[in-house]
Length: 414
Image (cartoon, rainbow, N blue to C red; front, side, top):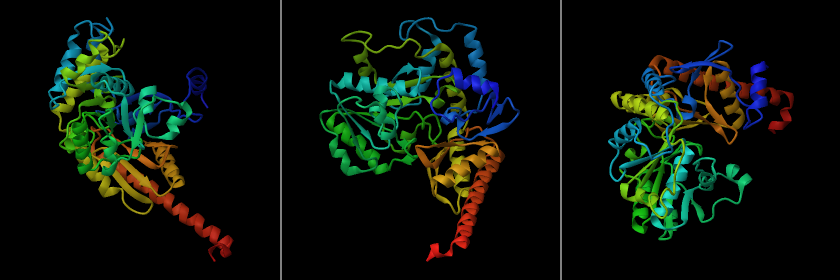
C-alpha cells in the first residue's frame, strides 16, 4: 500500500471501507493512467460523465481561455456572463417547447432539488410521486424521491408527502391525482438496473400528468447528451417533460448541472419572495465554458449514431452462458449476470486486465457499461471481447468447482 493511498484514506472522508484506490497520474481519451504506469480502459466514463473521453481538446482549450478571462464574479443570476447565456441558448435550441429557459447548478442532485422546488412553487401543491428502484441523488430532497431503501433508511424520516409507485405499471398511474405537484422519473432507470421505460407507459404517464395538472420531471442526468442514441432519452418516446434535469456528460468532465423548463414556470422563482432559489457557484464560468465546447462537439459529431453502434456491437458480442440479459439503449447499458459471485469475479478479472466497469454492492448482479462515445471501434470490440472472455472463464471456474465438490461428496447430488 503506497503512502499516497494512506494519505488519501487519512485526510479525505471515505464513502466505503474499500475504495478502488487507483492513484491517478493522467487521463486521456478512453484511458486512465496511474502513477504505477498501469493504463485502464474507462468503460464507465467516470459514471457516464466523460462521453467525449477524458480531456477532449476542445473542452480543455475552452477551459484555458475562460480561466484567462475570469472565474467566479457573483452569485448566480446577477451579472451577465456571456459564456453562461451562450451555453443556455445553444442548449435550448436542441429542445422542444416548453423547455425554453435553463437554470444552471453544480450537480445532478442539485438539478433535481431545484426541479422539485420549482414544481411545488409553481403549482402550490406539495405531493410528490416517484418510482420504486429509482435514484435521484443523495441530498435530502433528491433522496426523498429515491425509491431504494438501502439509500433511504439511514436518513429517515425524509420529506413528507412523497409516495412511490411501480415503474412501467400503467395501473399505478391512477395514484397521480389533482393534489400531486410533480412526478419525477428517469426514462431509463440507471442505478435501479438500467431498466428502460416502455413506450406506451411513458406516454400514458405524460397524459396522466397533463390531465391532473401535475408537473412531469424527467431526470436525464445519466441518459442525456447523446448517450442513448438520441440527444435526450425522451426523444425515443415522443413525449416532452415539463422540467428536464441534466448533469454528468453536460460539461465534459467539469462539475455542472441544470434544470430546464418554461419561462412562465420559472417566474415563480422571481416573486413571493424574490431570490427564493439561489446558488453561489451554479453556472460557474469555467464549467459553462467547458459545457459550451462539449455541446458544440456533440452537436457537430454524429455521436448519437456512435452510441447506437456501441449498442450493436455489445449485443452481438455479449452473449452466452452466465449472461441473463443486456438491457438499455445506445451506450447506456446494463449487463445482468447470473449471480453476485460471478459478477464480482468478472469485474475483478476485467480490472486485472485493465478494464474499468461499473458495479456496486447495491446492484450486485449488474455490470453497467457506459464507454466514451469517442472510443475507437477496434478498442470497443477488443474490450467487449475481453469482458466476454472474463465471463466465460468465471463460468468455467464455477462448473469446475461444482464438479470437484460432487466428486468429493457424491451423496449431495442424490
